[in-house]
Image (cartoon, rainbow over all chains, first blue to last red):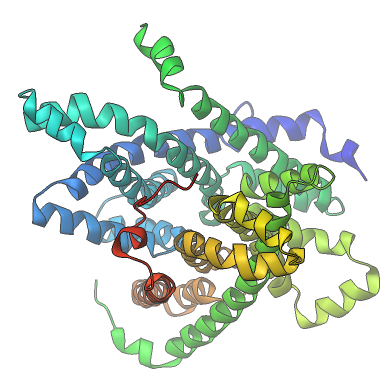
Length: 234
Length: 242
């Protein structure tokens, strides 16, 4: 075992922030986290909208959302990344590698989140909707004050799983040449040559810690009481 | 920009067919091993033995929380260190990237399947298992005849999702140079500059593969639950289980 050769200050610096302090190019864990968090935020927004479309009574909107889900869920993310890299230049748009990974990851994850949001909305018993109607709430009001607040807490376990997968999927960025955590690890591995086990175990451990962190963060807001205390001050 | 779709009927088309064959082989073997691993670890975790629990927990959580690409790279590059010399050398001659991809994909998805299996087993009332043991069935018998048939019905939809996810993840084997579909697309892009045509064909093939799997899952699901009433088929609780 040659942990000493792998765990040098230089290597750790590159793994965590890439060449940020040398050449100014961001990379490593920092880049991974930025791609991951941005894509999680964007895909939750897109998935939320599509999930509402899927649950709406308008036939056309439902079919559109279903088509989106089926076509984006049944294709490997890697293929979507290649498409996002290919398609924009054909329409004269100049797109960076960072942006193409971000777009592909967002579109892919949104398809899953659509289904989660739809499931969350369906999980509210019909009696609640009837009660809301009886109280005189409109459709938008029912959605905003009755359905979504309850659906949110039902969705959190599934969302946590999706967010972790999203974080893991950022590692595809290295396949189109972004200097993310995996790429830096691979570079260190090929420079040292003789310590593959140590290098890749280090990589796996970093990813493990990050993803457990995501799970734990989601678990703190999973319980309604704690969520209210943290964010609503009630 | 002009497209020339006829190239798909010529030599690049053959590359895609070869890639499809490798993808199918890779998915098939990985699916088999992933299901075996998942069944094994799922049942052991469900039994809840305190001796095995830490190991199983570690395997499942570690495999589930790390990216599949990194696992593929790990198994590929570590083979030279982990395997004995003679085995590594003989594997190198036949190309061990295929084996490394199978190991990585089946351990990664095995962990997910273990959780699905455990959840499925948990959904069957514990009394069923205890009753089976009480009337004298052995542990494998009571799993085989009593608990698993009921658990499969619950676990089937997530298992099918896992299978499609595995088929999609075979595309990651590109990272270590397995010549599967996505690799062939890259190859065609590099040597014929017909990236869009090849990518369209490859995307269509993946779509058909995954939708077929999902369709098979739907049919199986219907087959397994057709003897149930409509309420139970759609997962509604008709009577209290306690």
